Amino acid sequence: MRVLWLATKSPWPAIDGGRLLLWETLAALAERGDGTIDVLAAVDRDAPDADPPSLDGITIQRVPVARPSMRRAWLASLRGRAPEARSAILQRHATPTLARAAADALRAAAASGAPYNVVQVEQVHALWPARVAIASAVASGAPRPSLVLRAQNVESDLWRGVAGLHRGPMRVLLRREARRLARAEGAAVRACDAVCALTPEDAGQLMRFGGPSARAVEVLPAPVRQPLQPASRTLAGDPALVVFGSRGWRPNRDGVDWLLDAIWPPLASALPGARLHWIGGDGDDERTSTPAHTDRITRHPAPLDSRDAFAPGSVHIVPLRVASGVRMKILEAWSRGVAVVATPAAARGLYGLAHGDGAPPVRLASDAAGFVAMCDALRDPSTCAAQIASARVVLRRNHAPTRVAGQLVTLWEGLRSS
Image 1: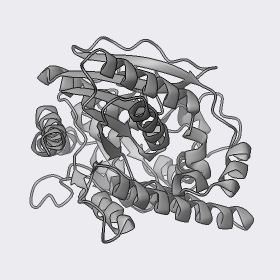
Image 2: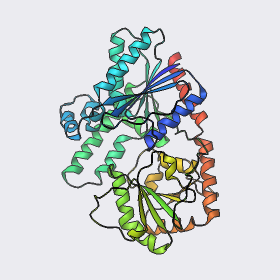
Image 3: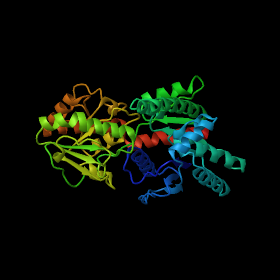
Image 4: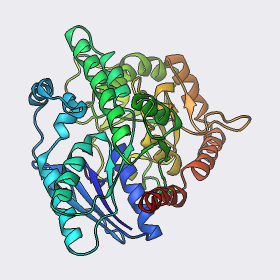
């Protein structure tokens, strides 16, 4: 089995959910040792990523690309005819450089006598380069590989939620973008030889977009090793509350602002020993208002190793009000032995929420009173330990890397034999 994997960002460093998902998947496949996997990952020319650790049987090549500005992408989308060309979000990632690199790889593999059996695409954003590369290589005489898409989320759902955070013309523009993304996702389900989603909910949504002629979408849970080690240091606070808060992505910015303005003031008043640790909040001067109890807020730079953000004994807060897919940071927290309090939107798609009589794997809160109650409960070490134990059961049942990697390899082999 030989697989060419296209992604719009490098899996390393695994500092965000999408990177972590891809890295954990590749690590699981390397452990199985099934065939050869070559990854082509687009990276911004001005911000190259660090070299990844080696994985047996897997090569990761970073392809420097120049992505167009959003303004240029919006203008290009007005002229597009194909579903993927009419989305500005997808236009930003329709990089000819990645398509050429993939086409060259397909032709070289065919010339060597060991052609690729599968082109695996990470997210619908990388589908255009993959399809262009396959068409170019096949025109040169290379055999056609199977095309497989893994959707980390339903992108149109996410942007529909982002539209709700805006007002006026921007809301209208983003709603239109969400509709175009939905059409592109439906076209992708019809065009690919196989499509995978992380959750049953996402699989059902993508099949609805695909219509009556859509293939069944496979549910492929996110693989997560356990136990992953927590940080080597603790954080101050009783409890020490941690939030990931890079404000470059609008749903993150909305969640952090909501936390600072509506959740943190009553939380800090009710729990005088609590401290809030804002990961990725260093140098953030965009806020026009100063949060309450600012002396108990510590801003930390985004870590080079995500492990450093998961201090033992801390409680991770996930205040997202707009989300899609599954929160990889919640799964990582579970594996590293860190308790989580999240909004229902952030927890959507997680397995194990219907926990019966056992401890819940994640505490849910939708308002300030809920966050106060959940964070106060997790000050008790036994309550915290029970939640972590329950979460790790969910990981073993649903996210075991060997099982998920085996499911993916079985899918590939089925396509080769069909």
